[in-house]
Amino acid sequence: MSAREQEFLAYVQDGGQVETGDWMPDEYRAKLIKFIEMHGNSELMGVLPEREWILRAPTLQRKLALTAKVQDEVGHAQLIYRVVEDLGKPRGACLDDLVSGRAKFHNVFHYPTKTWGDVGVIAWLVDAAAIISQKALLKCSYAPYARIMKKICWEESFHILHGRDVVLTLMNGTDEQRELVQEALDRWWGPLMQFHGNPISRDEDPMYLWRIKSQGNEEARQGFLDGYVPQIWELGLTVPDPKLRKRDDGVWEYSEPDWSELRHVVTGHGPRTAERLDLRRAARESSAWVRQVVLAEAA
Amino acid sequence: MTVYEVFRQERKGQPFQHAGALSAPDPAFAEVYAREQYGRRQESVALWLVPRDAIEELGDFVDELGRTYHRVDGYPLKEKLKEARERAAARAG
Image (cartoon, rainbow over all chains, first blue to last red; front, side, top):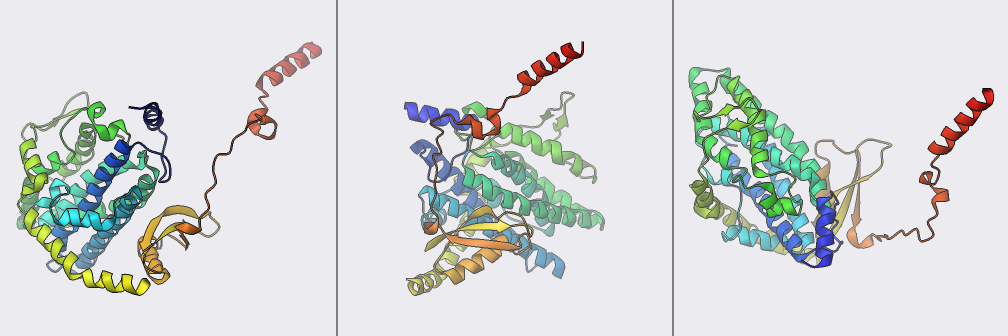
């Protein structure tokens, strides 16, 4: 590493922030693009499991709320891809890499949604796990990304309430409705525990080294367990992990998440990966003429 | 496509703060995108949309002569005040 790169590294590790036009090491730029692009992809792919439920949502209010959430998530993708564009990778290239399967997106968006219970559990707990990562990005060393995270976190907090409201409504309903929530929790617990990644120490995590992330994977998972397991238990739900417990020193113990499943899923082999990428590809192709017309008129 | 920087004002009387950027093929699209991204929940009372090319950024404000006399950090009074108090106390004896 050159002296200039060393100086830059010390600057970001000391809490310094960087703007688009500032000099930055190539490696830092490459890591930023990789990280932020994956976030954008996840926002965009994350709407597909929920979109499947807009027409099947139980009331008009729920359809509207779910539609609004889908709109928010697509908006997040637009903001995030804009940040990636300023770092040097055009949005079109990000979308091409996404639909061709070259780019990654979060594990939780590769799975099917079987019932309305899944919709509640996703909006509540998947968004809760996501917001723990996202809140830590408010301190990201790359300032333009940190700034848009303010708006994103603000909207995510409404999504969590929407999800919790769906879950509470079901829990206050019939035995059958409560069963839907429990089954969904059983299905989602594994992917949720994998969500924050393997417990690599933060000092060995290149995203932490450059202060793109401000917390380690295990720190994020502990934050999730600490914040949400008590909320799950108080509703009378069972977390499907017999080893889960909070030690006297405040640390949560749990069964080892299935890391091979995580690797398998995020490398494009999840149960719904191919189907969802097909849908995204079809949408990209069928809307190509709109982009052509608009850009031709503007030129 | 043109890149626009978006500044939003949260309440009347407050400063406009940078919120993010958007790219749009023309000003009409830029307006629609800005309203959707930064105003649809009434989180702003006004937005400024500025084509990025129109912004002139200035930096590097170097204090070559160390002119602390026109800043508050040029007036560390603590030691002097302590001495003045001690002198006053001694005089009052």
